[in-house]
Amino acid sequence: MVALLTVAGSASTIGGLVWGVRKLIDERRQLVIKLSEIKRINSDTSLTTQERSVQKEAVLPNTSSWGDVEYIRDWIRLFILEQAVSGLGWPAALTVGGVVLSTAASVWSIWA
Image (cartoon, rainbow, N blue to C red):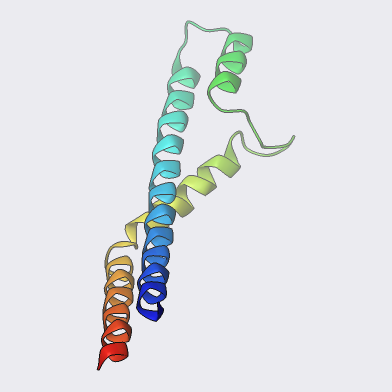
């Protein structure tokens, strides 16, 4: 029973890590797509100001308040996500490796 709980705890930890990394990468990908579309709409000279506003709100509602630069919070969020995603590689791999090794050691210690 202890061995099963140890393996379940390990699987839960690795599952949470993988889920979090996937959410982070997906959120970054979605922001890149939406902000690229906002840039395209802003540069479309065939649209009126009102049409631009309507199309931009349909793509990504503006969370900035009066006086802010348009979509500044979303741009900052994208930059933060890009930094986080770029630094995931080795730390995530070492975390998974550590969980696997500690789980193996724990299960082995039960029978040793």
